[in-house]
Image 1 (cartoon, rainbow, N blue to C red):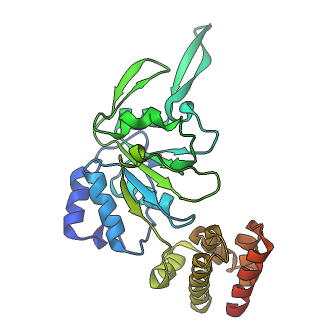
Image 2: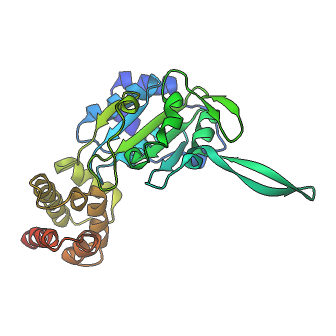
Length: 291
């Protein structure tokens, strides 16, 4: 089923008004659909914000679908998606680009290679900043002017003043409390519309497993849906980390279980990623009761 056709008429109208209609050299950067929200309001609110030129900040645990949500918005608006994956080592060049030596007509020249922020601004496309709160606080102020009404930046590498082309939007993702993250500056957070995502469960998760994995045995799929619910409950009680309840990892286990036994698939996709032996035992016990 076409995702757009499942949305209310008013939301479809918004998409058609703001959708990028023209072919682009960055066609291969347009995301694929696949995000299934626990609450349909989540995707509709994100569409409304994007259509009004707002930046959106996706909050949620690991594996809740933040990246897939960004890709789905890219698909709906037919907008290429440039990405920055943040880490503690990220610097301004990760956003802005860099200078490099090249040769033209036998002469050595300095060439500027634009980064994802500059590319997205100049072409009027989406910029996705993954785990934005993992970046060092001193790195992020370079994008303050990009995120507010000015939509401009002075590129320190070229001294060029760049004003974002219409269609440019920033989608950022955050996982609060994750190891290596820092508290996001309130002034920066206020430049976003915040949308909280949670793990999908029940029939929605079942549909996602059926649509995106190789698993086709309904009994096994139902067992994985219950297994996911048990993992989420264990995470909420502090028995295991949120990473152990990742939907992404669960889907990997579903794929593997089409070929190898489910308990071994869970071992490879989930348990072997964990370091705490007590947490591993919790997941093993949950798997034993269902498979």
